[in-house]
Image (tube, rainbow, N blue to C red; front, side, top):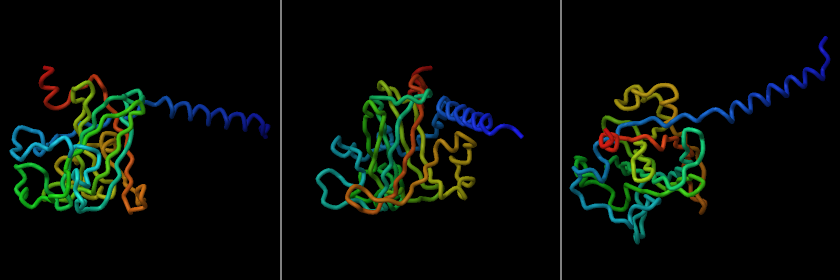
Length: 230
């Protein structure tokens, strides 16, 4: 029978090696996903340009408004990291999505006249030294042809390095029927899935809490910026 001391040493050594391996493993790069037709600043949107006052991190309420937009509150946050896992400072994160009724802030949405006038639809922020991003928003409404999702972009040094989407873990059963999400597999798929948990905001109000890091290559180019580089 082996002496217990060497066995304990071996177990500790294996645990330490596993921990080092986990820490040294490079994070999975967030998958590139289509921008879609309803980015609020694309050239086809003829609605009034979103003013600077309504581009902050709280999408639930317009500047100066007394009432918030309709929908279930979601607190979405994480850290923007490079492919080595280090936080990226001064990265601009943009997010846009439908209101609770499934309508975008875009003239190309056939239901645009039914949009929630109290919802902001778009938000942006620049990360600090810790790379952290955080948005206060709602659960996106559904519309025909797509599952629930958030659109987002990451820009570094003025260049778009990632365009992607977040989808919801509790809707996995519908991934295969979604024209966008079904194209992703394995790590690429998991890099775009969030799993909100029930919680509360700082005031105690009920909220869904979703935490997801975004991993980008600062030297990459996404979408239109990729075309410009060619």
